[in-house]
Image (cartoon, helix red, strand yellow):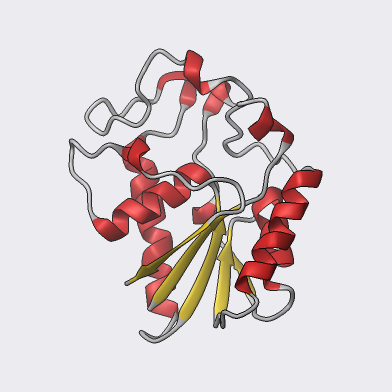
Length: 177
């Protein structure tokens, strides 16, 4: 199966370096343009289905990117990591390493990293179960959640540097699973 992971377009909170989490922040004008550019990049690709987060920034990116060429299935397991009381704040001000599996912090009500890994694995397992091995699947989601899907595919351990993989707004990466 070919699995394409695409991050939503830009929002105002991306510009302001604020953790969005599950706050439903819409695409800004640049984000809409990035989704349109993603659509142009994907014109030569065939997708059997698209899975997307139901949060508006990802849902709108998916709708623009696939342009009616395939069905979009919204999955709550593809929502961004929940950042609790830290949503809307600058992650560089946080004291704990929220990407450390051994620490597995839930400070400020943040969704622990091991929970995000498990939730993203559920989404991945659903995609595998609902599609044939030769399917081409587009997943449109969020930075942290797509990072966890990526590491569920390539593998990880207690020493994995989760910050080593990053998708920018409107970027896409391909995996063979």
